[in-house]
Amino acid sequence: MEDARVIGRFPAGTATPPPSKSLSQRAIICGALAARRGAGGESLIRNLDFSEDVSASLAAVRALGARTERQGDVLRILPGRGPGAGLIDCGESGATLRFMLPIAALDDRETVFTGRGRLLERPLAAYAGVFAAAGARFSQEPHRVAAQGPLRGGDYALPGDVSSQFVSGLLLALPLA
Image (cartoon, rainbow, N blue to C red; front, side, top):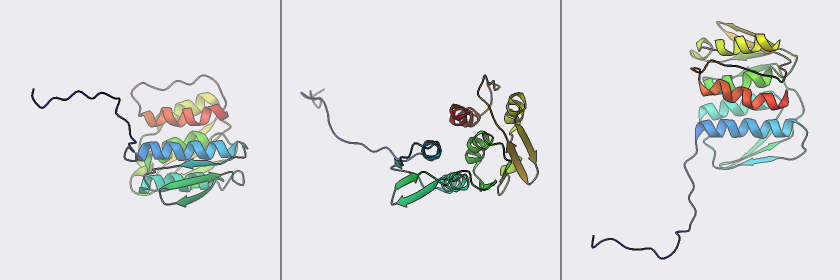
């Protein structure tokens, strides 16, 4: 072990991990929800992955009333104008659809989700059961998915074999129920 060295101090420095699409989507939604609840502040999110799926999440929070400004890899989310239109285009982003369905169901107005490709064929039955048990409405048709609340606080149960996106969607929405 002639090449071994002992470092006499704790290493220091800064490391920036590569951006994560999934974490970027969750951060955008959290920032928009924080602004939605009238905190009056803004959220700054750095090191975002501006993929097509992240762009779909941005469009979704804007449709629900958030205001956003992008400067390089920094996104600024500002308090919005309140509830937005009742139509959200998720593109081909399954995460956007699964995260936003429970958030849309917080409102007593129907929100319709559209998308491209096979997005609307993806399994969403876990939400059908959860919404029905909570008194909210959910429907899935070949060219649209719809949710209508109000989704209320309480105990929720999901099968253990579903995607973490369903759990994340509920965890994002239910503190506001």
